[in-house]
Length: 337
Image (cartoon, rainbow, N blue to C red; front, top):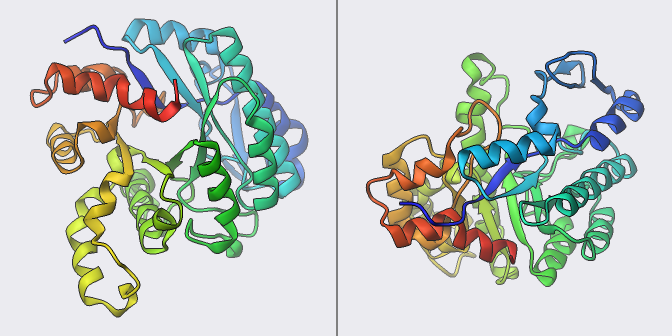
């Protein structure tokens, strides 16, 4: 089952300009980046140090070479943890500019292979809108990225995506016709999830469900009817809670404001293929349809797919036409390619 273009919408990137800014300016936010380890740069935030970043995260030539090896035609480049919310608004804006400009440079070098999902200082909405307006004219930016909740240097000021202060950002994203791609950042109940890597195994999927619920119950999907949203990790636990969400909306006073069944919102979202389960992926496809599922890899973390294309092409329940949608056609539409 070959012959389809493959567009990976869940491919992380740490440009050197972003890392160097953390190295030189991060200390006042208790952050830094150490380049001394031959395995790759190491980011530290609040005293906690991340593992070395493989050079494929930072070197686009190595990335494209591997894309060739595994049969992926396009990466939509996105930042991930620690994002930019650990810094104040002005510094977060500089970090966002560094990432966005670097993805534009990557696109200029590989115009048919690499595109960018814009990073924004979401915790300062005015600056976020300003950066959205700036990148609107930058070649290669084809979507917007956000964590599943808007964090801030003062964690007591964290906001859910349904917070009214974020309305101007959603409005501008919708006006510009961008798709909003989400990714977990600071996960729920981190102390309880400290062992066994549960912060990722349970925390990340739960964060996607929380974000999806806020976008529905908080009225964001109604307020911005043209807004496209893509959830990572096959939607996390979100698609599997739809029955519970729907029942709650029917019997709980907290949901009296809901005018439509929750199931009607499922196809307002897109979902990537990173489920790590053929049966889970089949359930997702049956639930939302092949036109709402897009290829993802979580490049290049150990919790991702080394061969994302085969996850689709070797899935017994997906025919040739459906594979073409999931591998590339759906993402092409979302990215406006």
